[in-house]
Length: 346
Image (cartoon, rainbow, N blue to C red; front, side, top):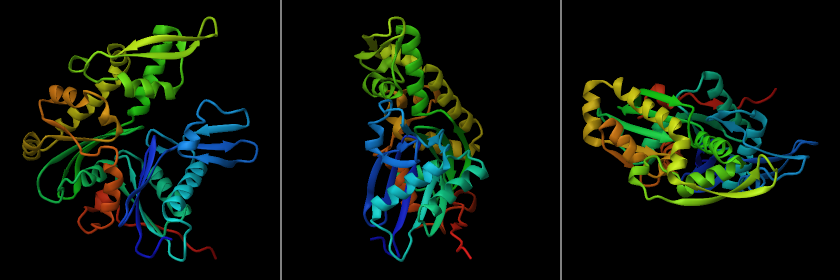
């Protein structure tokens, strides 16, 4: 049962939700997928169980991702998903509701930010705070951002890529790009459709990316993978073979957008902080950072050393939990200190 002092940090990602509980670490890591019965709006499955249903449900059941491009696309479903994960992470709520810190992309609007906070409160939080993703990622990666020294983080998530330069506990300059792992998957699906005349699902696109995908094929071993789908001409099942080079060709445009965002932030970085970044390098976090060769690509394009965080998938979740213990250190613009509190109904 959650007690009075149980703080919870949530990485509310487009692809996955990670929940951090104070004193316990990351207790939950589930896909951001919800299966709902369309006839009565009842939730049938959440997380891993719902993800297995993607593209395989009967007419009366819909498996959906309530978050798109890093923001809430379906508020009611997001609230139900959050409530499920909060209960699963800490048991049934007792007398005391937890304080919750939720990460958001650095480029969200005030309306999108309030929707996240409201969903967390409605799902059972006593107080709901939000923190920008690159700031949480830096904290989770163990970087010291409280000093007057420049630190650069590139967080490549499922829905967004957030690039930021941090100093003195806040964001100096940043760029949020609505390009992430999902866009890579969609690009692979379109490429397979165009080149092989084969229809595959987004889940298959993700599996191809993880198995043989590369951001820099020159530095990656040439690999092949058999893909299966529906022939667009005959309508019958068919198999083809896709290579690492072809996957790179499919996602090249999205990779250029990520590189462009990193360059843009570097161009707007104050000279003194830019000098620090040249010394310390750029830190990569997020699931997209696991794409083979993305560190060498960014390093070659920017001329700055690029390092992969120790646990890129968990950095943001760990950072949200850590942020709740250092609200006095984080700058006003980054920590959004004033929480949203549930008002008692009269």
